[in-house]
Amino acid sequence: MGSQQLVKDKVIVVTGAGRGIGRAIAIMAAAHGAKVVVNDLGGAEDGSGHDSSPADDVVAEIKDAGGEAVASYASVADWDAAHEIIETAVSYFGRIDAVVNNAGNLRDKIFHKMTEADFDAVINVHLKGTFNVSRAAATHFRAQTSGAFVKMTSTSGLIGNFGQANYAAAKLGIVGLSKSMALDMGRFRVRSNCIAPFAWSRLIGTIPTNTEEEKARVAKIQQMTPEKIAPLVVALCSDAAQDVTGQIFAVRKNEIFLFNQNRPIRSAHTADEWTPESVIERVIPAFRSDFFPLERSGDVFSWDPM
Image (cartoon, rainbow, N blue to C red):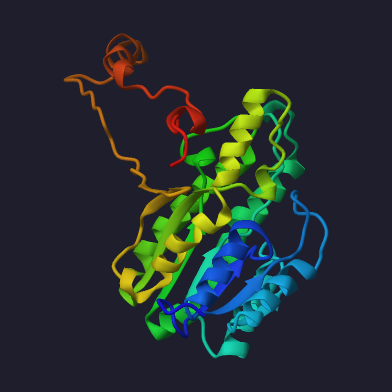
């Protein structure tokens, strides 16, 4: 394994670790000395189905390289199953030090055609799943007064995208969840941070490639490999990042960003009480120059990945 053992002997659970970003995180964590629980349901992009081979393959790859890993096939969306994921870590390796909430699914649909099933499926895996696994670990983290949570958010929620109301709602919900966990568990030296990853994975493999422009765009996205996300994750799980908590990062190829967080930017007040008419006449014109444009992620990250 690698000479830098930044997370040596730490027990790290990575959800959705059978493929893509989760797989890359699990492999790099193991290379840096961690004992890894490779959790993956083995579902399709929309979360349907089960297959143990993705998790098994990653465990085999880690072991072949001299690392330690065990597979878990439990669903993060189920409360009891999520607790089983953490119990797998404790029973195999004796403890739990970090949780990387990476499991995801997609049910993209334009909002006025989105079904309740489309919404529930994505909320259940991303937001409820992140809560379930984190909550199962929190009891252990509190008892040992240490622990790290890393959660995956998305610029779909932080900025915006078409056809992803369910995904955006879940991913922005994760940001609020992470901040609350950082506040509630800070006294136990437990930290929680979010990462918005830009990476080519099967979840965005559905982007059309009909025109030359689309092909060029996809070629650029494919350079943003899942392996580019892993170094920040491993760093945040290490003791060297003990004082980093409540933050939102993004990774795009070789760029790492720190995101701002919601704070008031303008105010208006009146000597009398506001009326609907005075709001229309005074407040909205005063604020208009600072209104945020209705942008998508690609409008804000308008330059090629570096």
